[in-house]
Length: 446
Ligand SMILES: Cc1cc2nc3c(=O)[nH]c(=O)nc-3n(C[C@H](O)[C@H](O)[C@H](O)COP(=O)(O)OP(=O)(O)OC[C@H]3O[C@@H](n4cnc5c(N)ncnc54)[C@H](O)[C@@H]3O)c2cc1C
Image (tube, rainbow, N blue to C red; front, top):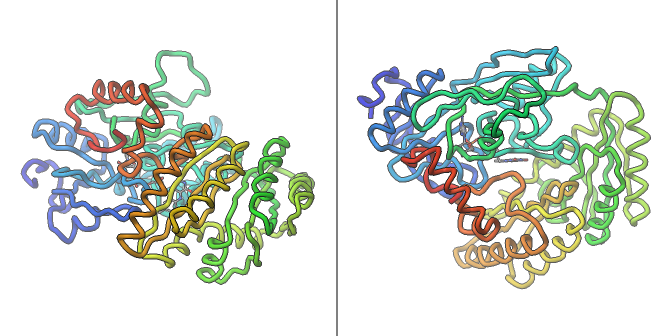
């Protein structure tokens, strides 16, 4: 391997088992070893890596921070991992055009720390934002608690520099706000999970950072009432930036993990409104009224430290649940918000039917739930997998999608056709056209 990649310094070609172990995982339970890892620092090096791999018939799997929850960056049989974390420079912040260009290894929160100096921000806010990279976010079309107001990564991608399977470098898009010129290839590449090309630079439209925010916690003793109130709040055309839900198993786990007291409730709904003046306070009171009328006990927070504590608690959900069982299977179904109450009822019914523990939290404001299946034995894992298959069918029957943000990867691959039908073949044809040798991330999505 060192010979094939001899154009890279020796310390940036890893072949020792101990080094490869660091690349054998993501945030799913699976483990797979690559045969080597290469760590480029420039677009030219990435292009050279792709040409060398294509020549030798080797597959390449791009990797950012490895936080994927779908197996997307897991090495495939006999592949080489391309680790992008050394390509971590912010190339340009253009205040006039509210645009930033950065290498793919830049970490989400580090980018926002830099943007804050210019009064700007990049909103998607995934739970993994303190470590995940822009390359991973673009490849997965990541989003998070703010998607209900601000949308997903795709809504911000202005341009991409991409190394194609031929080793050629193409530039897609630009700083401009609109274009009617040809196919929108950059949007096709967003969410492609490293299967169509390798990003070497990401250009993003960013927005002014809001200066004011206000938040609400609503505690319900009836989860159906909570789900119905969420549907009403979303339909109410209120300017809600965040609308999150946590059921009682998640609340209990978070309290014992973080030490933050959230109060006892069957379901907690957390909301935030943000803007550029004190009108946010009026807006959060309107949101609170909907939840109070639906029977919740409501608390408002205007103090920055209180609000930060609330989001710290919400972001602790996944690590807190990880302490409850030896294996977690975290799902990412998304339904139209009108179907949220029914989806939540069906999740409960699945837990009872399969006698399995399911803890649910998620981005309720956009219908994106994370029912998390807890298993401590092979037998329990088998029941969880059977329940998950039913979960997917129920979600699709309600007009939903298998994944709102975590992608297909390996985990949801068997169900891809179920969601997309004949369109799955169109996607396969696109993959074949752009990557005829199947160099990039084989075995993912399809
Ligand atoms: C605790 C926790 C919370 C999370 N919360 C959220 C959340 O709220 N919202 C959300 O959307 N996700 C969430 N995730 C999932 C995950 O963090 C995101 O998908 C994240 O954006 C992945 O970034 P990464 O740098 O870790 O990418 P990786 O996991 O390393 O890779 C993800 C995919 O991107 C591809 N890729 C990486 N770099 C490139 C590149 N330069 N060119 C082409 N392809 C590339 C990889 O091949 C792979 O297919 C969470 C994960 C964890 C562990």
